[in-house]
Length: 274
Ligand code: 2YJ
Image (cartoon, rainbow, N blue to C red):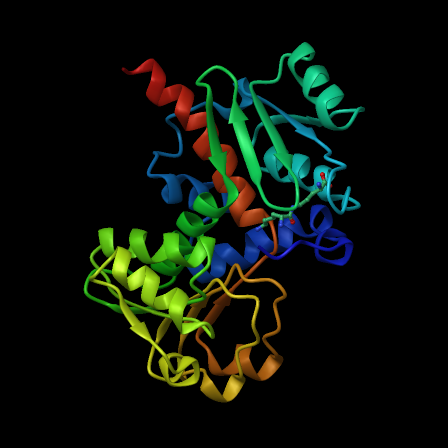
């Protein structure tokens, strides 16, 4: 999984308004609405103000990313949650979060990124929530994905989840990866997914693309009028790519974190209705 950098996250808090405007224009959805659609909940089912989110900085592995925790906090606040970053990191931070009555705790190391709902005793995880959110964004940029030919680029954690979710949505799904064996594995797991070996050719022949790969996509391979929903980092699309495509949806953290927060809160709601 690609690790975010200080540079990826440094302007996130300041640019939430701009991203909201962009998403409204391209998908007709706010960040919160998109997150709710991603996890299959009605926007007003939960009063998110009643949930307190704690974000705990984690120092293991490559350590703290400057403004990562603050960005996660600000994204949660943007969609209406109460949220704070703990003063302490790691286990002490976890204890602090529980003492300050957090309902949901966000923590990320270099491999995992979770939003743990303490009452429901369940975790939302970033790969799954990101997969759901970018599918919701792609669907919102066009219409339903039923019977549409959709390509997933990248057969890693997010891409393979996307392929499975898209099949459930009734799309005709293909997957491509520079490591063809990974695409073949996804095809073996979901025989309705078609693995395509030639990455360039796969992209050239698809209007609807979900890019969950850290690799660069050459502008010459993008279909005129393509809809590209792209959680992949680094994000290397150039101006020409933006001109050629009908829409390219990307941000390094916000859409996925908003979906994690809504999904984690939704666990409580679902638990109450059992
Ligand atoms: O607490 C911190 O500041 C750091 N331990 C954060 C680490 C962030 N983790 C990553 O970047 C992982 N690779 C997962 C991020 C997935 C985003 N799509």
